[in-house]
Image 1 (tube, helix red, strand yellow):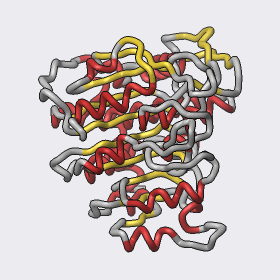
Image 2 (image 1 turned 30 degrees about the vertical axis):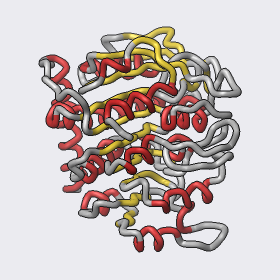
Image 3 (image 1 turned 120 degrees about the vertical axis):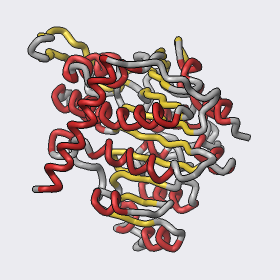
Image 4 (image 1 turned 180 degrees about the vertical axis):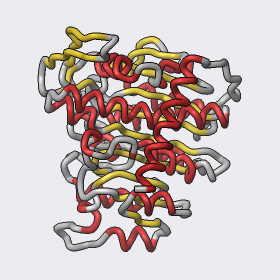
Length: 363
């Protein structure tokens, strides 16, 4: 009961701070270029999902503080409507590929991701997700695979040590495999602290952490997980920021997409708000360090959500979905910190990789 109270108090503090920040935002003088990049991907989060989050959050929606904004086109190499694998690869690697493919071009030739380039240059790297960590979006930053559903093969790509901290679900793909291998033993041998609960995660002092917090995907935000993504993000930042050369971190609000597929508005908005709390953690870190770029976007929109009614005073919403699948509408981009101005106007999802590489001066 005590731990539950402390968590609720901490979460309330974050929300109150964000509310005060929205009302009293002041200009922060940033360094000339970033040392750290924190990228948030709201999987399936289009303009309507953001609008719904603003209505429900009152003055606690941290993206209101982001000075720069734009839109991003999302089509893949072979489809006008992308999937998460192709879109994630475009963001992570700067290359258009076919739907379903990870970390490679349409010719099946592997390409380097921003994580791999950052690691080669001495930076630390991290992935955080509320889905299985082997799912399409986080996997696109490390895996090389022609099939996004090859989860056990994708888990093997995490053995190369190029991701220092990875936190999400998917433990079954590491230790309950068809080949009988227990990859967690190899991870420990490679210097990772393998943890299975949020409490274990928070207590870890390792510079390398494999947080496998659920067997496959984590619970819904509406079923007890709300706020955990913020704590996962905070731990990743705490660990990665020990590297004075800098870090690159990707945080995915995975289940905005899941809710869109199910056309579930309440779950959809809850996941958007959950991501908002995690973004608040990064925003505070960026304000404190003044050398951290925070970028928030989506891989695609899911559901074709339209807000057709509601009541601002009651914070009620009436939304309808055009589909249970992805759409091709442009997704929003918000940026804050040194270099934020590069992510304005209409950009393509392949523009993130070269921009991050240029800003961090990665060879």
